[in-house]
Length: 141
Image (cartoon, rainbow, N blue to C red; front, side, top):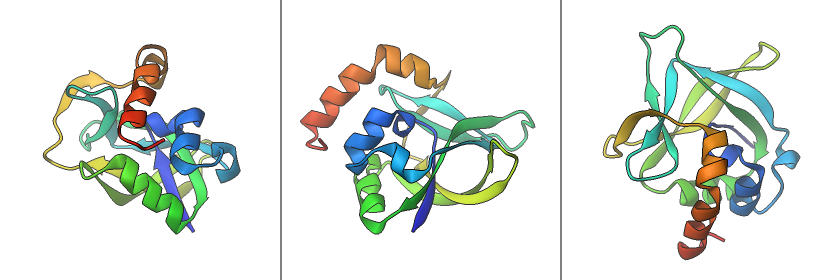
């Protein structure tokens, strides 16, 4: 079983259900923080990518940790994230102060990120509907 940190669109319960084929609630989601990174908008896209910010002591990314992901779940996540992202292991801090190891999808060097911070609430308000349409076109639904 696998543990992952979701910081972008997969924090949205509807998107996670679409991609994983089951409710996010069944994966014991827990609020968490990844220190030393920022979530920035990807150029010409509505989703984020992580940028390392090790010299900024305030840098952190809010997200959720999900547990009990199966090999099938991870395969679905890999397909969703595509070749622009690679999974790596990080240490995240849960809302109760515990630190745990989790996998996270980080953008590969070829993916161009902007200087604009990414916000889940703004994405849900402005881009989610169009994003789901894009998933349909890519046959991920």
